[in-house]
Structure formats: structure tokens, C-alpha cells
Length: 137
Image 1 (tube, rainbow, N blue to C red):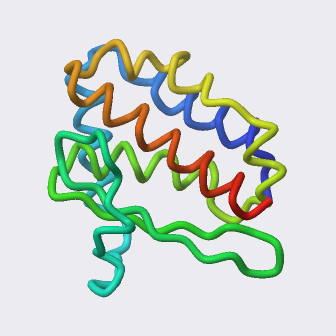
Image 2: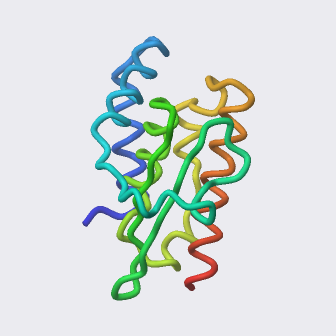
């Protein structure tokens, strides 16, 4: 399994292929469409991420000291964004997550190309992942 840093570098490389942000949005949409469905029972108020314009549910389980995430959203771009985060942080230990940062988001320019409400949602998603890691450390 690649490290968090290696996975972040892969994401950066994938986004570097696209010169136009419309193409990057299309890529996010494709990521959202390809993300596995979350179990309907996981769409609870507890799993709903506060601070997102769209409805985003983030569920997790702790198994053998590792966190495994699943998510869904009612907005396809938002679903693509959360799928990027899950790709990087799924299957990691809480300590690995807490020792990492989200700098790859800045390096691909995602936050600056989102509307203010979507950017706030992204920050809320990242904060929720960190909170889950802290609670399970």
C-alpha cells in the first residue's frame, strides 16, 4: 500500500494532466460517479458533515487499528471531492492520518477553484476526517 504522501503525489500527477479547470471538474465528476454506493443505513444525522452546502455523509469503521471510510453526497462534484479524500485516507491508522496534512488539495488548486460554499464544505470534510482520527487514536 502506498503511503499517504505517495497517494497524494499520485492525485497531484493526475490533476496535472489537465490544463483547464473545466476538465478537472469533469474528472471530479467522474470520480464521484465511480465511487461505490454507501449503505443507506449510513445516511444518518450523525454521519452528515456540518458546514457543507450539499448533503455529505461520511461513515467509517475501525478495523485492526485502521480507519475505513465510505461516503455519499447529493451533489456529484462534492461526491468527487469526498472520494479524493477517501482515496488518500482510507485504510490508514489514526496516527498516519493525524501526522499528515491536506497540502495536496492546495497543490492541485482545488480550494481556490471552488465556490466559497463548496470550499467551506471541503474544509468541513477534512476537519471531520481529522476528528475521526483523533477520536480513534
